[in-house]
Length: 456
Image (cartoon, rainbow, N blue to C red; front, side, top):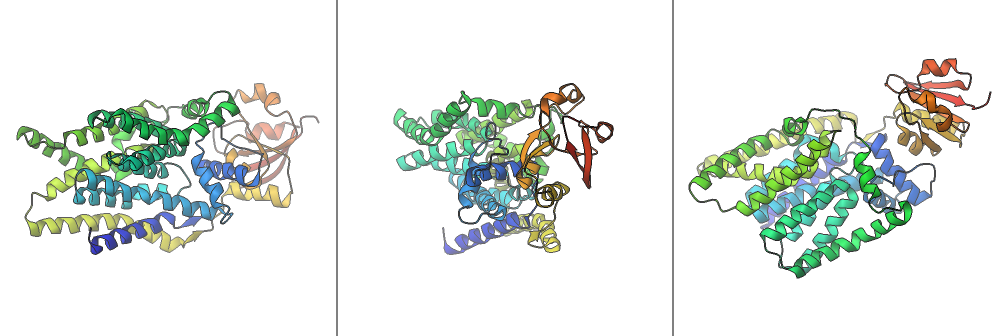
């Protein structure tokens, strides 16, 4: 790779990192505060709340380690953006290794500048960091004649699992790859040894802590089980997740593949099969899962962008040289245009978003003005209140109409009750206002704070 290409790659990654990092948000929402709270449990010894029983630990561990450098959620934002920007880099390297430089470059640019990927890279979540770890692991395993790389591939595979449990499905991709490439037992053992070194301590901890080393995986998969979208949700939203270039590229790839098969010039069969198996496997699992959010689709980022990029490259290659360069320039312009709204957003908001949510303001009121260190009960956003208030937090569950039958069992001790008006959860403000055990204290936006006394 010449110096000009290397400098261009560095520039692309720098821009990709900056649009992922900024604006740095002061306010964080539900899942983000869980990973921050779990990090505080490790760093500060908090005992007020944690979700280690069903959340993957790695992101919180990275925050915990980062806190030794700077104990601030801003450091967590920097770490998340830095890990996330590795995804386009290693997707480029995978595409280059399997299909060639241009395919890798197109896939890298799509990953670097897709608005939805950028948005989710700004959140303190596992969805994009896990793509980076999966990409590193898969890239390393492609060097099947390098013992050290196979060992490291196993390590990053387990790190991906500890970042997001769904990544365990990648094991089937690796098994398929081992079969196609006719890995011998020693190579598989080397990969497995690397994976075992990382995953075993966590499984041992889970066995000791919960009595079942599989409990976090089982519990994590079952936590959100309410059907909220149609069965075809992910198929219908591929362009929103990865830009319109990906479905167009996939169509082009399919057409050119058929032409190559017809002309008996299909040379990428094993590579395409692995990519297709990867997409089908994860989409089947995600489609089967009742609760769907578009960010859950990211485990297919690697294969779907690479196959689409191969289709785009094959399309480019059919044009004369001068037109080919024009198409490449137009592609680059299209990707940059995708970033413009983000740049405008950052320019209008500033590098740091100082906006505080009502949940934060309510938590700070409880912590700083009330100097409260008792129990908080909440039927919604309880991790947010736990993180920002530092108070022991107990979730109200069930939070439907069954609550009224089991309220005494849930709320055994005096404390504060925080509820959000406007959501279909119980108890309601109307019921609380009529119940002498609850005394209204303060309203912050749609957040209502009550003092609770079991005996009156």
